[in-house]
Length: 246
Image 1: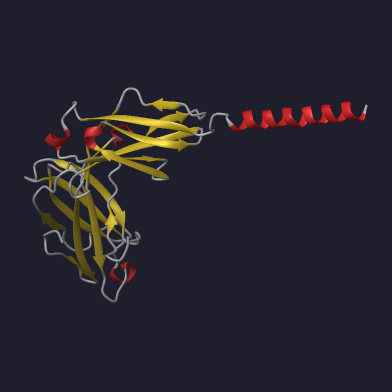
Image 2 (image 1 turned 30 degrees about the horizontal axis):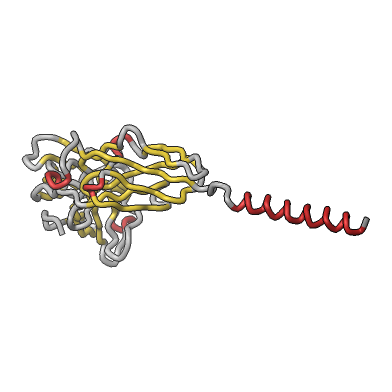
């Protein structure tokens, strides 16, 4: 009777071991996301000067990069979830000259279990807008001491014939990094890098009245995705500039 009991116990343990072994062979919980892409109207990478494409999920939470000629970017080991995917086409200087953000980030769902999900149709990359960055210096003063509450900004085509962007930024807007430039908002992607070439800046006081005369900056079109940096100096008498980018 004791021998029979031992055999039953051994059989149970062996059976449990087999079950645990099977559990170890289960498919992984993570999945794969493959994002094919096209440049403009199915243009060639060399023709548009794109050497690599970087893909980001959830605003840079994770990124992967591939040669432009590969035609796709792959994410391995993504946990099941819905992700917002954005693509950026990089030139030889690592500048983002194209992106897939014309219609905003593309939403995709990763199912996990080792399954590969492929974006269909491929994501379309178009020319990135230029970036307009400004900084202002009040010396030992401040926005309040100089009576400046905001800056009205109008951006034009290089020949001044067409308005591209009209906006206003607060004087107390926080700067970025050591150089303290502020990125002028361009939510509608109106700053075409192949057209932008003239910017007017008019300071206003808290009552909406102009402080001094407007300043005009003139420059060559910077190209898609590239930045134009402008600096102005202000005091109680108003603001001034060189009229040229930094």
